[in-house]
Length: 300
Image (cartoon, rainbow, N blue to C red; front, side, top):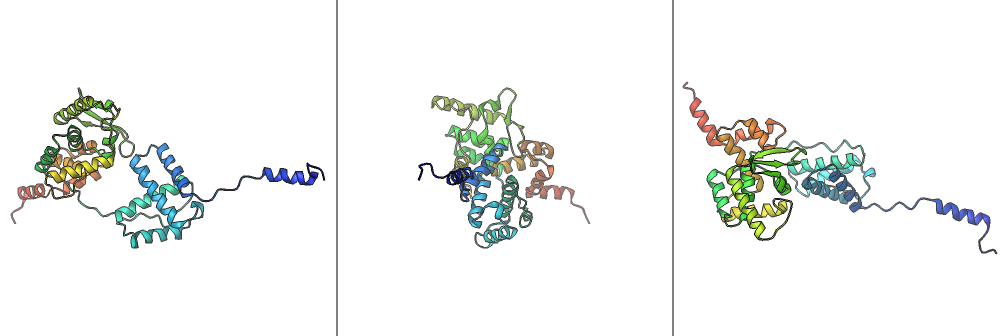
């Protein structure tokens, strides 16, 4: 028998070598990683990338099969699981459906049935009174960074993700402008940098320089860090209600509207795509509603 084998056996070996490599088994981490990298390439916000990645991971872990094998019955079963076993609210279910829709679209898989988003309940936003907001600021007055963060949130109306992405070059002290880059909907906007916020930022930057902190970001912190700081500040201020960074955004909009600011300017300040979104604040201030009613009350 020759060492090289017969011509037929050598041909068989050649054909075997030409075959494609075995398809790797279905990998949830790999699919989620590709999905999140695609979202990052689309310049989605870090919060959206993280949230949609979690949705994809949960869904794929539930169905246990590749996306191309998923049926509408699988999607409907997942929705029932979230509602009946995980007790998801309509808001959470709405976000999940948005994430799954994006997941299927990213991989070019048509999926219509089971992906109808539920109607979200319209709840009035929670906000602080001006006196409560002053107490919140005072609770962190001795901490320059936290004091500056609360002022930017309270007077600028920024979302927490927008605040954490602020760069030093986004501040224009002379013009009194703060540039918000890639806000919701990937839109840029300018907000007013009023005197108290400017003073708080300058104090914080001076303190940061003494501490030797170097960063191109104005506040090199994560959204979670900011949320925890706001929660602790509210506790020290003796505020009963649950306070988040978004509470300060609602607080600013409500205070501006109460003081007579045109709703179109509030819309631009907050970065709302439609004034219809901003109009919810017209239903928030009960005292203003009562005052307006009593001024116009008819005498039947």
